[in-house]
Amino acid sequence: MGKDHKDLVVLLTHKRKEAGITQASLAEAVQVSRKSINAIENGVYVPSTVLSIKIATVLNCNVEDIFKLHDGTFPLLMESDKYE
Amino acid sequence: MTFFSRAVLLFICGIVQIFFAAHLLFDWSILKLPSDLMFIPGVFVLLAWAILSIDYYFGKKEKSNALYDEYIADRYYKLGAAGFSIFGLGIFGLFAIQDFSNWNLQAANEFILNLSAFLWFVFGALIVIFSYGDYKESVDG
Image 1 (cartoon, each protein chain N blue to C red):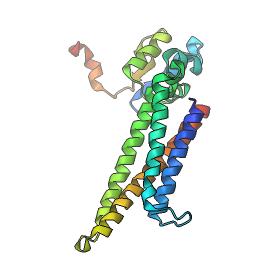
Image 2 (tube, rainbow over the protein chains, first blue to last red; image 1 turned 180 degrees about the vertical axis):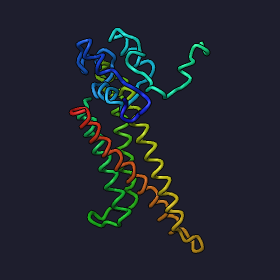
Image 3 (tube, rainbow over the protein chains, first blue to last red; image 1 turned 30 degrees about the vertical axis):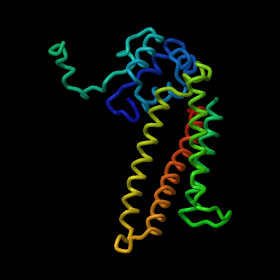
Image 4 (cartoon, rainbow over the protein chains, first blue to last red; image 1 turned 45 degrees about the vertical axis):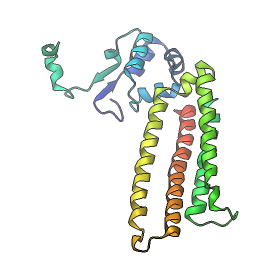
């Protein structure tokens, strides 16, 4: 769970290690600093949509595989099909 | 430009601001600096702004991407917001302690100098803290 964003579950560390990529290489690939990747992994910073998509593309997964809402944060998600 | 050189640049800017602000706010007389030298921190700020802007627009793209990414922009935004909030409280305090019944040109001059000194002090302190944290994060974070 994010340190400063209690509703957000960040699975970036897990996904990055699964892909065998270091923070520095991921940072270089998505054109940000290594400390930004570290801040995202520790839940200190929530990235923009564009950066999230870039990270997901490099890690070959979906944005939802990296960032999730904590269970019960948003009850409407249970009925999301109503809004599609 | 590297994280270290940027930290040094901002640190110098902040220290100069704090020095001149403290000189005026606490009435230091170490160097017998006249009040009209209060523009000097502004010169440092303009120089730092020019150097950082030139580096951002004309520096190496790979380095600029890391040095000026969205996380840093977010930190600067928070620094500015914190600075203006504290400064706002300071203005409120300075207005509250004025004796407007005996208001004259000298009192107005002192009031303006105190305001500018407080502004330099707040932003100087924040920039020093930011430059240290920014560099430390780039090494350990």
